[in-house]
Structure formats: structure tokens, C-alpha cells
Length: 276
Image (cartoon, rainbow, N blue to C red; front, side, top):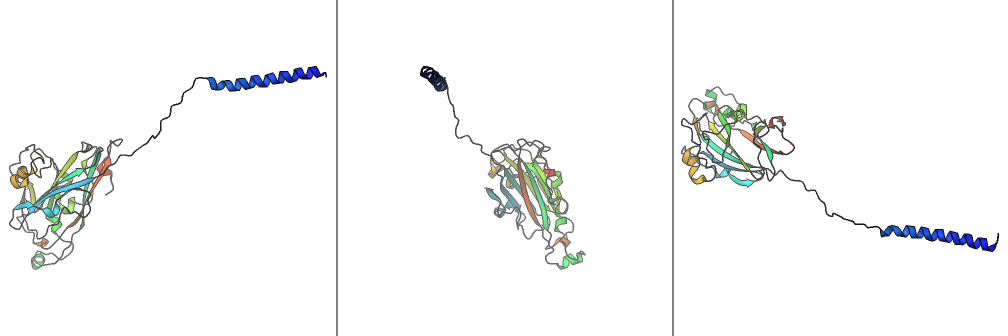
């Protein structure tokens, strides 16, 4: 082949390579833009159950007084006790109002009380005379309880409702089942940063509502120095009549538990579905 032809071929190849380079380089000339969102996060919420308690009991003079040993401000429960009463006599009565706080999120809440021990302690003469032969202790058969949804003033008022399943003698009502403070069947939900109150009364004997119901004053816990049980009564009467000699020296030990669960995406939650 002539030299002139080779020159022409090489020149053509060079033109093709040059055109390809121009085409490849031309892609950087199109309009473009880039947007970047940085630092995206997810953060879980919290259900942080905390409890406080305000307690009253019958003192040695038969009068109702505040129980500083069984009252505390809002906190996690560590070694606090709702009950630590000794030397009980028939006719003695006590009252507590529990404040339930579930944190910043809407929540359901449940309560369980479980009698764990019923010691006989010392078997004294009046007990044996009453045909008491020993364990278990009989105080559980005479110590009556009732719980209700309170407005925070430690007084059972005429428009407040008891929790029937927690209103009986300890032997039959305090057996560890979960009861609703608020659930799907017993609402409303406890809203975030809201307080829900549960009142409880106990009586060594027959517990009944007051002959004249205490009228609702709509003050709740706003003025505890003037509208509490020391001024208005608990809303209950306690009769110690009858013979409870077989309960002398006997005791009861119990666990009090609370449970809270998120309400969002959980609208059908029931406390009764929890394990006892």
C-alpha cells in the first residue's frame, strides 16, 4: 500500500479518537445539582412510671393522723412501704391516696396487690379459746380493703367509684391479679405529664361508706391542708364489733405492684391480660 494511503488511514483514526474524547468530555457540561440531608436520627420515647403516696392511719388515741412512715414524694419505688402498721385493734382504719405518673407519653396503668405471707406469730390464750390452732394467721379474714379512683384529696366522695375486685377482705381480694387504673375497658388513658390518683382504705373489721356521703368539693389535691381527711373524714366507716380474737398477734405481708404500658398503637390493652 502506498505511503499516502497509510497517512490517510492514520489521520482518519486520529479524527475518530479526537471526536470520542470530545464526546466523553462534553458530559460535564450538563446542568446539575446535589442536595444532602445530614444527621438524620430516630429517638425512642419513654414510659417512666413513678409513684408517690399520702397515708393516714388510726393512732393510739383512736384518732386519724398522717403517717409519715408511709408517705413519700414522687419517685421510683425502692424501699418505700404503703403499709407498716403494728398493734392493730378492731375498728382501726387507714387511708392512702397514690399518685401515678407515667412520664411524658400517654399510658395505660395497672395495680396488683399480693398477700405473700399470713404469719400466726404468737398463739395467745384468746386465740386458742377461739379454736385457733395455728398457721395461717386469721388477720387476713378481718382486714377489709377498698380501692377507688380518687381525685387526689384522700377522701372518698359521693361521685367517685370503687374498684369492686379490690374491695373485700384481704384473703379474697389481694391475690396478685392485675386491676385497671386505666386500660381499654376502664379508661380514659393517662395522658402524658398527667397524674392519676388511686385511693385505698383499710379497716380491721367491717368497712362501709359513710352514712352521709362526703360531697365532692372539686378541689382535689389543690388545698390539702383544709380539704383532706383530717378535716372531712375518709368517706368510710369502720366497725370493729364482733369477735376477732382468733386474729390476735396475727400479721399480713403483701407486695404492691404497678405496671404501665404505652397507649399509642396499643388501643385494646387490658390489665386483666397480664400474668398474675
